Length: 111
Image (cartoon, rainbow, N blue to C red):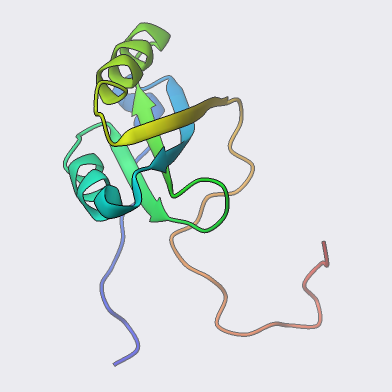
């Protein structure tokens, strides 16, 4: 069938998670999957992406404070396979949806 499963969108702010971050990682090529799997097991990591370009991995994470984020990134960077990272704090979520529209409609606005 077309439907794989149902999804619940959690409001992490209501659970006390005030800091959201987008992090990009350059990883030693032989260890990309290992790093992605390790990130996937982290409770604060909400999504992990294998990407193309200068960086190899992108992930979204949520924390209760900047201090928690700082501690997480410092712990993460102890991994010898991570060569470089860039972390940006997400200021505002403009759009977040677990699905895409099934088809383009003429009433949709264009970017």
